Amino acid sequence: LAKTTQPISMDSYEGQEVNITCSHNNIATNDYITWYQQFPSQGPRFIIQGYKTKVTNEVASLFIPADRKSSTLSLPRVSLSDTAVYYCLVARALTSGYSTLTFGKGTMLLVSP
Amino acid sequence: DSGVTQTPKHLITATGQRVTLRCSPRSGDLSVYWYQQSLDQGLQFLIQYYNGEERAKGNILERFSAQQFPDLHSELNLSSLELGDSALYFCASSRPGAQETQYFGPGTRLLVL
Picture 1: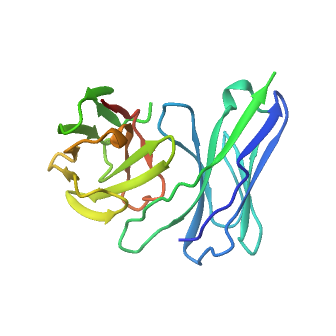
Picture 2: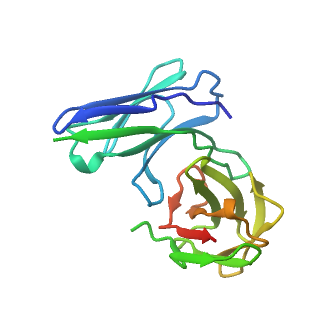
Picture 3: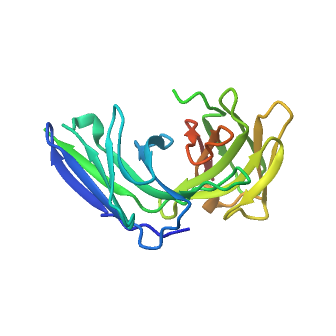
């Protein structure tokens, strides 16, 4: 599976928009880009997934350029409770119906008042 | 609440002992995944089961084993425990056809003394 690279940490203030960019240069045709959020001592939580262009849900937006070699998770108007580690993953949906997720180090987002 | 339950929440044991961690997936989910998270190794995929069968193996030690029962709950058995096995152990589940979207449980914190 494609290796992902994302910043180790980011700082922001409440009310700001935060964009976390992830690079995945070796992404394959049948790979999906998936983002998870993890709070300390809790399991990761699925945020959003996309294949190309833009995906938006109630929590975040995911922007994927045409070459799919990078993706950007956008969190609108962050709050203190958005302080967490954000993982970018490339997941392969196999025809046999299963895939595994490889978590990297993630990006530690710290939101300050 | 992801709908995935794990027991026990905390476990303290001694080196050389054996423990069993239990996981119940969300209703309708056929896949169960086990992960280990320690401070120095991050979130590591251990093993996946799908409808009772082993489907994928990650960085799982030979001292560790798992199984998924007919009612789809899963158990992770850790034996000959070492100090380095102290970690958070997460279970996740996913639906058929959506394997890349995993729902994580609250985890079991294992401390080996």
